Image (cartoon, rainbow, N blue to C red; front, side, top):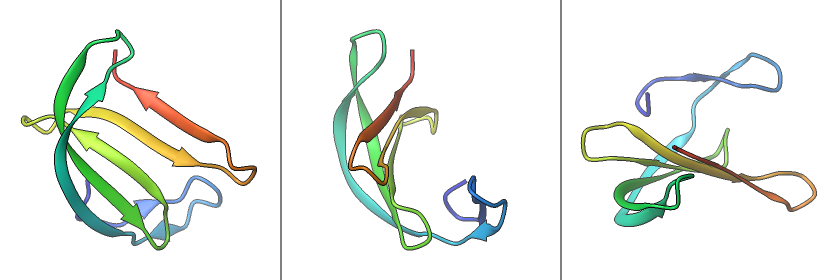
Length: 76
C-alpha cells in the first residue's frame, strides 16, 4: 500500500505521498497492549503516520486536522 498512489478522501483524486521509514517503536493498541511496529511517515500530498507489525498487519494511524486536533486510529 505504501508504494502505490492512494485515493484522497477529500475529493477522490490520486495522491502520491512521500513515504519515509522511521525506526521501529512500540505502539499502543486500542486494547491497551503495546507491540513493536514499523513506523512510516507520509508527507506531501498527505500528512500522516502509519504503523505496521513485522508481518505487515496494520497497527495504528495518526494525523492532525485543520483545528490542530490529533486523530488516532488503533488496532483492537
